[in-house]
Amino acid sequence: MIEAPHSLLLCEIAKNALVAPDRIALVDGTARVSYAQLIQRIESTAHYLNSLGLKPGDRMLILAQKEHQFVYLYLAAHLLGVVNVVVDSASPRERLDYILEVTSPAVLFGIGLDVPGKRCFPLDGIPVDSVSVEIAVPPITGDAVADVMFTTGTTGNPKGVCLSHDNIIGSAHNTNGFIGTVGEDVEALALPLSHSFGLGRLRCALIAGATLVLVNNFANLKSFFDVIDSEGVTGFGMVPAVWQYIKRLSGRRIARFAGQLRYIEIGSAALPLEDKEMLIEMFPTTRLCMHYGLTEASRAMFIEFHECASHLDAIGRPVSRSVDVCVLDEFGNSLPDGQDGEICVRGNMVTRSYFLPKDNEGAFFGEWFRTGDWGHRDEDGVFYLTGRKKELINIGGEKVSPATIEEAIKAIGIPDCACIAVPDPNGVLGEVPKAYLVRGDSALELDDIRRRLQQVLPANEIPVQWEWVDAIPRTSSGKIQRLKLK
Image (cartoon, rainbow, N blue to C red):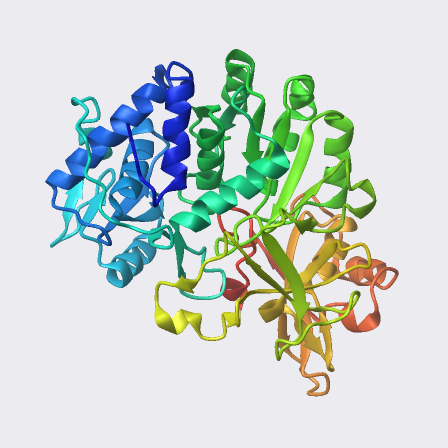
């Protein structure tokens, strides 16, 4: 049985295998893997990695795939102290080449990988069913790096975020403590495992002793609904873009599972207020939990829609007593409630550093991680987000969030849009807003849009420049890639 003092994640999964060895840990198509089998396959995979000569601190790049073999490989690396570099299997070659150059992994795993000078292996070639062998766990500490996750790179090259074994279990404990995932739960995981959200849900379910059903994605909604029905699913996670997809293609049909679903976790991007209210009405007894947090500070805050119905426009409160959040000015000084500044976080799940030393420059105020998000705390201790600090538009000295303008534009009937700062053509205000609009089925013209915005926005927040586009560039989790617009 696994003994890995450095990885409380593995220790808790192993404990589940002792307490309920026959409980199903993973469902992947027709494959059903018990907790006892999960532990055995992690050990077999670790033995295989040993045979490849991997040592603690070596880096192993994995093109993440929604398959049970990925789970064994990912956790076996933790057992040995090998560092996982988890990458989206659909990553553009330019991004993959950048990550390869930066991390210089010893081995690579994934379909179709062929990198000159590197040892590349397919996931399905790992001998996971070999006889269990006792693994000699090297002396590793909990603050050793377990994973390197690369950011989505909305404003430049992606940054490698170093997450320790302690960070990983800290985030999982914080999240489960808020959401309440337990061993009797069955969770459908359709989120990509290459991102912090999906990988976090995997860890949360397994330390709780729950059953995790691997679903390819949300594209086939009928198949996803069939899984909820046939497997008795009690919870799942989704990003706001997925909710828009579900709503558009199936209307309110998912509400038939309201009495079955105990929790839904939402995160990675903003969700309009009307959608939060719709979810409250459709799921009156389900815990509707929306998190705030970057890869660097996973799930720092939460809001539960039913409990915080009067604060639905907020991003929430700190997830647990292990997490502190504050608002600081540009010099690192604390700001009073109600005043906008940079949201900063410290806690058990916060990274200590980026992979490249140069990326740490300006990333911290002492022990506080600087999120780059602008916002404030109210007198009730609830935090509100104004926008990304780097994306704020400085109009004559007044900082305006592009999200505020975008919400106003979409509210009058434009299906999608994005705003950025551009130089004031008159040379007076420094910066002014420019709006990129997606027409869709809207018949609105620019004069109509300007006239309606005058009723809801101050004059200085109405865009000065406009451009119709076919689509707004976004990351896979729905975040606007403003740099591409610039």
